[in-house]
Image (cartoon, rainbow, N blue to C red; front, side, top):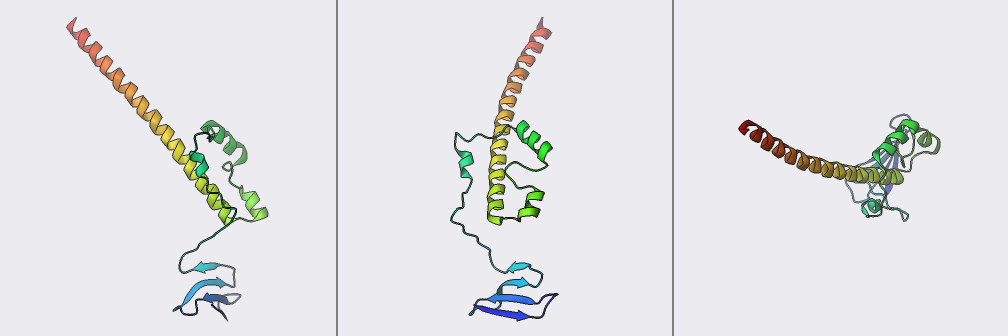
Length: 141
Protein backbone atom coordinates (compact mmCIF):
# COMPACT_ATOMS: atom_id res chain seq x y z
CA UNK A 1 0.00 0.00 0.00
CA UNK A 2 1.27 3.45 -0.78
CA UNK A 3 0.15 6.76 0.59
CA UNK A 4 0.40 9.85 -1.56
CA UNK A 5 -0.32 13.42 -0.73
CA UNK A 6 -0.88 15.85 -3.53
CA UNK A 7 -2.32 19.33 -3.84
CA UNK A 8 -5.98 19.10 -4.70
CA UNK A 9 -8.98 20.95 -3.30
CA UNK A 10 -8.71 22.98 -0.14
CA UNK A 11 -6.66 20.60 1.96
CA UNK A 12 -4.78 18.32 -0.39
CA UNK A 13 -5.67 14.85 -1.50
CA UNK A 14 -4.64 11.67 0.27
CA UNK A 15 -4.75 8.38 -1.56
CA UNK A 16 -4.35 4.82 -0.46
CA UNK A 17 -3.17 2.68 -3.37
CA UNK A 18 -2.66 -1.04 -3.71
CA UNK A 19 1.01 -1.44 -4.64
CA UNK A 20 0.35 -3.66 -7.65
CA UNK A 21 -2.84 -1.83 -8.64
CA UNK A 22 -3.32 0.49 -11.53
CA UNK A 23 -4.77 3.39 -9.59
CA UNK A 24 -6.19 4.52 -6.29
CA UNK A 25 -8.44 2.04 -4.52
CA UNK A 26 -9.56 4.59 -1.96
CA UNK A 27 -9.23 8.33 -1.62
CA UNK A 28 -9.64 10.68 1.31
CA UNK A 29 -9.67 14.28 0.20
CA UNK A 30 -8.78 17.35 2.18
CA UNK A 31 -12.44 18.00 2.94
CA UNK A 32 -12.82 14.63 4.64
CA UNK A 33 -14.73 12.89 1.84
CA UNK A 34 -13.87 9.23 1.38
CA UNK A 35 -14.22 7.63 -2.05
CA UNK A 36 -13.91 3.87 -2.45
CA UNK A 37 -13.39 2.79 -6.05
CA UNK A 38 -14.19 -0.85 -5.42
CA UNK A 39 -16.47 -2.08 -2.63
CA UNK A 40 -16.77 -1.05 0.97
CA UNK A 41 -17.04 -3.62 3.74
CA UNK A 42 -17.47 -3.18 7.44
CA UNK A 43 -16.95 -5.93 9.94
CA UNK A 44 -17.78 -5.68 13.60
CA UNK A 45 -17.56 -8.32 16.27
CA UNK A 46 -20.71 -7.01 17.94
CA UNK A 47 -22.78 -7.04 14.76
CA UNK A 48 -26.29 -8.37 15.35
CA UNK A 49 -28.23 -8.86 12.14
CA UNK A 50 -31.90 -8.33 13.04
CA UNK A 51 -33.24 -11.59 11.60
CA UNK A 52 -34.71 -12.13 15.07
CA UNK A 53 -37.73 -10.14 13.86
CA UNK A 54 -38.79 -13.27 11.97
CA UNK A 55 -38.93 -15.38 15.13
CA UNK A 56 -42.47 -16.32 16.22
CA UNK A 57 -42.10 -14.62 19.60
CA UNK A 58 -40.99 -11.24 18.14
CA UNK A 59 -43.43 -8.55 19.23
CA UNK A 60 -44.03 -6.43 16.15
CA UNK A 61 -45.34 -3.04 17.26
CA UNK A 62 -48.88 -2.29 16.22
CA UNK A 63 -48.89 0.33 13.47
CA UNK A 64 -51.00 2.65 15.62
CA UNK A 65 -48.21 2.60 18.22
CA UNK A 66 -45.60 3.34 15.53
CA UNK A 67 -47.75 6.24 14.29
CA UNK A 68 -48.01 7.67 17.83
CA UNK A 69 -44.25 7.36 18.30
CA UNK A 70 -43.58 9.16 15.01
CA UNK A 71 -46.10 11.88 15.88
CA UNK A 72 -44.48 12.47 19.27
CA UNK A 73 -40.79 12.00 18.36
CA UNK A 74 -40.58 12.87 14.65
CA UNK A 75 -38.50 9.78 13.83
CA UNK A 76 -38.88 6.01 13.69
CA UNK A 77 -38.56 3.89 16.83
CA UNK A 78 -35.09 2.33 17.21
CA UNK A 79 -33.58 4.79 14.72
CA UNK A 80 -31.56 7.74 16.00
CA UNK A 81 -33.10 11.17 15.64
CA UNK A 82 -31.47 13.98 13.69
CA UNK A 83 -30.57 15.58 17.04
CA UNK A 84 -28.88 12.42 18.27
CA UNK A 85 -26.88 12.13 15.05
CA UNK A 86 -25.85 15.80 15.25
CA UNK A 87 -24.77 15.43 18.89
CA UNK A 88 -23.20 11.96 18.84
CA UNK A 89 -22.31 11.29 15.21
CA UNK A 90 -23.45 8.27 13.27
CA UNK A 91 -22.24 4.70 13.60
CA UNK A 92 -22.80 3.51 10.04
CA UNK A 93 -22.86 -0.17 11.01
CA UNK A 94 -25.49 0.40 13.69
CA UNK A 95 -27.51 2.54 11.29
CA UNK A 96 -27.39 -0.12 8.58
CA UNK A 97 -28.62 -2.71 11.07
CA UNK A 98 -31.38 -0.35 12.29
CA UNK A 99 -32.48 0.22 8.70
CA UNK A 100 -32.37 -3.50 7.94
CA UNK A 101 -34.55 -4.11 11.00
CA UNK A 102 -37.04 -1.54 9.68
CA UNK A 103 -37.04 -3.18 6.22
CA UNK A 104 -37.65 -6.58 7.81
CA UNK A 105 -40.43 -5.16 9.99
CA UNK A 106 -41.97 -3.49 6.93
CA UNK A 107 -41.92 -6.87 5.21
CA UNK A 108 -43.82 -8.37 8.14
CA UNK A 109 -46.37 -5.53 8.08
CA UNK A 110 -46.78 -6.04 4.32
CA UNK A 111 -47.31 -9.78 4.75
CA UNK A 112 -49.91 -9.10 7.46
CA UNK A 113 -51.68 -6.64 5.16
CA UNK A 114 -51.60 -9.15 2.30
CA UNK A 115 -53.11 -11.83 4.56
CA UNK A 116 -55.83 -9.40 5.64
CA UNK A 117 -56.46 -8.40 2.01
CA UNK A 118 -56.74 -12.05 0.94
CA UNK A 119 -59.14 -12.79 3.82
CA UNK A 120 -61.23 -9.75 2.89
CA UNK A 121 -61.24 -10.83 -0.75
CA UNK A 122 -62.51 -14.28 0.26
CA UNK A 123 -65.30 -12.65 2.31
CA UNK A 124 -66.17 -10.36 -0.62
CA UNK A 125 -66.31 -13.31 -3.00
CA UNK A 126 -68.63 -15.20 -0.65
CA UNK A 127 -70.87 -12.16 -0.14
CA UNK A 128 -71.00 -11.47 -3.87
CA UNK A 129 -72.07 -15.06 -4.55
CA UNK A 130 -74.76 -14.82 -1.85
CA UNK A 131 -75.98 -11.49 -3.25
CA UNK A 132 -76.19 -12.92 -6.77
CA UNK A 133 -78.11 -15.92 -5.45
CA UNK A 134 -80.54 -13.63 -3.61
CA UNK A 135 -81.02 -11.43 -6.67
CA UNK A 136 -81.67 -14.47 -8.85
CA UNK A 137 -84.18 -15.82 -6.36
CA UNK A 138 -85.87 -12.40 -6.09
CA UNK A 139 -86.29 -12.24 -9.88
CA UNK A 140 -87.86 -15.70 -9.93
CA UNK A 141 -90.37 -14.97 -7.16
